[in-house]
Length: 105
Image (cartoon, rainbow, N blue to C red; front, side, top):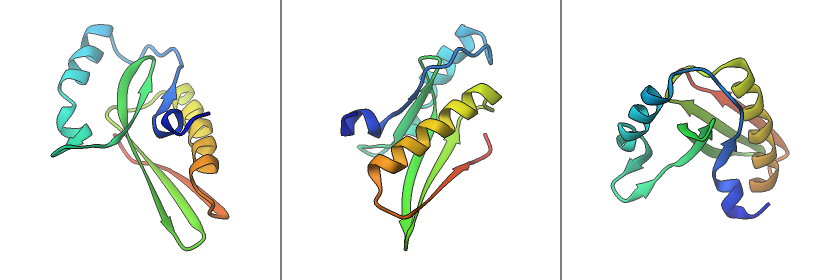
């Protein structure tokens, strides 16, 4: 896995959380949440659509990956995202402890 692939958590799980038209509208309206000035935030996809942002912080011997979805996640998407987040932490941090947190949508 390349660093570029690790930088964007991509979850390829089929989800029926919202009709395609409303998912497309959410993606168009999410630029304010995915950009600050000219700085892009790390994003993740669910079912091929922009579903939220994530951030990695390190403190002492603990690395924390916080997932901030734009909408509530289904159990299947959350489980797949958690597994991908663990792989990303292993690749991106040498910390001895890993913590994955899901913020409310």
